[in-house]
Length: 423
Ligand SMILES: Cc1ncc(COP(=O)(O)O)c(C=O)c1O
Image (cartoon, rainbow, N blue to C red; front, side, top):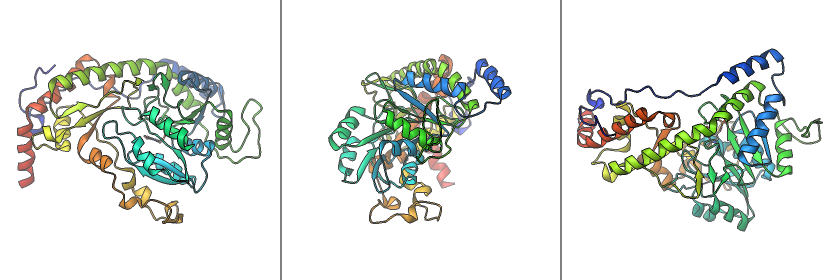
């Protein structure tokens, strides 16, 4: 595996180690192409067509949840799921400081006050102890986000929910098919929110959905998606509030096709991640896989979560290390910025909810500083995309060889960046 790890760094003009072609994303099958043509010719392009019905029931079965409802993206799913479980304006919703901004924004947009708390430095998911410390008499719900390549500790989350009578909306935008003690992410809390946006492991370009097993949560979600209409075959206007958050038949064609491949993709990524974990450990060095919690019985990877230890990097920073690996053809990503630093959360614009909040009641996001979140984002977290985890044995071997080459040349990397800084 570490063959070819000597030689001049690609960073300084040497030859990149990775020569194999990376996998492509998204993947599409002939079946979808045929279905798509049929849908286009049928004229039934939206609103509970055959493909939406079929995908919703197949995906509910895959998750082991009673209901699954498709919506137009994975942001409105969070809004609707929160409202469906009972969140109202003025309630507090606890959200991790590290997630895509939509998790927090969705709660803000329905009038809830978002309370951001710190993450577990190993998993990068919300820290249950930080949740406990943030609970007040206004707290109504928690959004655990199963981020990148680790699940949130759902035993701890469900225990907190039971003790404090709180609702749980799992954000499963990243982990379609992950399982905690055999139970699917999205089927553990009161509702699960999924995104099917282009980069996700099950995708229709855009799209989203809500999983739940409670009939009332389903009915409210349905009304919110479909202008207040009642669910079921006799669906018709009711006396409830709602929007148009519908999905199209064309998107559901893509989702049905993707779902047939999802179990195989999950397996391939799990196998490659296991190999990467083992070989990184054998190799030693600053870049390692994070601990795999044995309660995660299936890990669906949006990205493999890696940790970089600056103490073992001979003065090379995480960003310099990633740049050197990237030059070798091993492209490793960095996490999102802390949610509270996102301009959307700090925008005093008339179209943002922020100016209409009582500052005494909400966190001052612009001044927030959550130490584990800050450190992961700035110095220690790294990610290997789910796309690369679909690579064949040769490709994965080359990625590992690239990491080995970087590890063998830390002094040279440090010298390179030091001289670049003085030029
Ligand atoms: C963790 C998380 N939550 C929610 C979303 C929102 O999904 P969408 O882009 O489909 O609105 C995303 C999308 O990237 C996400 O990564």
